[in-house]
Length: 218
Image (cartoon, rainbow, N blue to C red):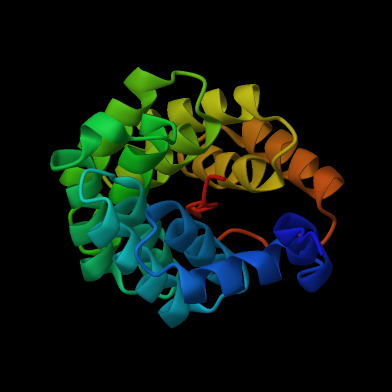
């Protein structure tokens, strides 16, 4: 009788997730399959399995920066900032020609790791590169504000005004602006920004310091 391998495949695996997991088991040297498997594990917060699959992806396609970028993100999510910085630096410095995500996201994520590693100047430089690549990058403006706040509250407040203009629906940006405006002697902006944050998120915690945002790009 005629066999229908594609039909059998659809019947066997009812979701793309199980398909990626089973493909990953039988195609360990396929970079695309291993990358998809890594992302599936990443979405399920199965960090070790995700990293293992992404390392296999990197071996299968040594020119691709994507596995390094995603491993860097995973290391940030589990608080391993030294390792994150190494992988994200590799994604930019060694494999930048084949980036398939928006470049500003990679520079941004490297900045997050560098700031956590006690390198605020390096983090600021990477954030400014990200904002040169995409001046409408609201997350970048918010995090630049947090990065420079200890050096210049006024520069930080300016960056946050840019963030809330670009993403007025984000309550965390308004809460950060309220905090910085309070410290720069602008009570009107502080009270207005805090009111806006509460309208958007009634349970928003009162900010004690400028809060970074890390939301991995898709």
